Amino acid sequence: KSIDTIVVQGPLLEGLLGLALKRILGKELIVEIHGDWEERLPALRGVLTFFAQKVLRGADKVRGVAGYLVAKAQKYAPNKPYFLFPTFTPLDDFLAETDVKFNNDILLVGREDRVKGIRYLKEAFSLVENDFPQFKLVLVGEGLPEGKLPLTEVRVRMKNCYCLVLPSITEGLPRVIMEAMALSKPVIASRVGGIPDLVKDGANGFLFEVGNVKELAEKLRTLLNNKNLAIEMGQNGRELIKEKFSNEKYIENYLKMIYS
Image 1 (cartoon, rainbow, N blue to C red):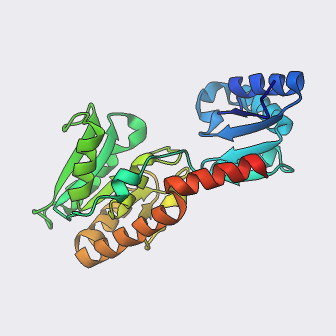
Image 2 (cartoon, rainbow, N blue to C red; image 1 turned 90 degrees about the vertical axis):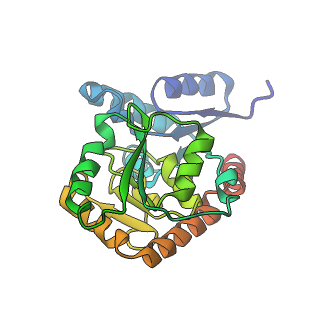
């Protein structure tokens, strides 16, 4: 009886349950979108979109964690209050790090999965490694050479790397990019999903088209050739995180959504 607002984490099953509760209890419904619902089961894309559309149109407010998700939802439910801010990511420990170094590690943090596009990074690195023999490719995560590491160790690897690369085929709003930026590291990533919300091409890193090995190699070459550029981009990324993605900013955005 004390519930004022129902918040659901997606527009599919949880969204349908939220819609039912809204009608039973007469309470406000906020639908959050944390990923592309159509990508869950591509073979059922039409069915999933049918239910998502129904839920989005029945919501009182909609929140997306990335711009492309908000744009997608607006096609099906244009006349709703929309809110755009990322998933809560505890970045205080990353922002608190002061002893940041730029060694010669080109870092990827992820897992052995086709959608992570790791083969593109390996191919791109093979095109530049002879010109930059001091640099090495470091792959951290489940199924990768360095294995899955505790978050504290991942933070150490990030703190000391030269740059982070994320060559994914599909992504939402990657936490690993926010963590790297909080540690003042430039990021090279594929132009997909919510990544352009974080990586501003030429400002705090570089974007490249999915699967374009030659373009990725060119971005790597540019960054490895210019340490001052890498440091400048890293500082720009850190400022973006402090301004838009801090814990305080998340709480501010959430309260604004609830009480607007």
